[in-house]
Length: 150
Image (cartoon, rainbow, N blue to C red; front, side):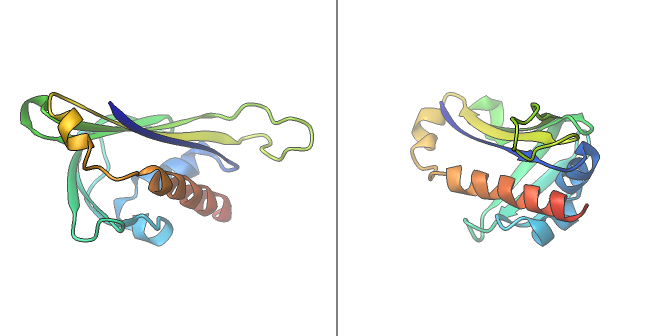
């Protein structure tokens, strides 16, 4: 199974971070990896994500889990589960920082991970490029936008 994940600590309220993650129209303003998102990021919503690294490529997805300010899951892929991408966004209270570190009260641990599964996953996954740099950039962009908005 091919999988990518990133995590970062964001010094901002979870509600502010959630607001950024669920504002489809706002993504191009803060996220350097997303050109645009069509649709509404709501429970059961259908969205199409257009990414900058793969210009011209659009990824139709469905919002299958939606726990405000906590967890969201987007899925997409082929019929009958032959190939499925499952992206999970998680917000949780950050661990208390060590002395001298600046996470501070109200900091949030943001995690984003995506796994590719299904009968055709071993074959299709070979053509998926290394998405780790884009995942890390997404997290850094989110952290910057959320902290700057405060």
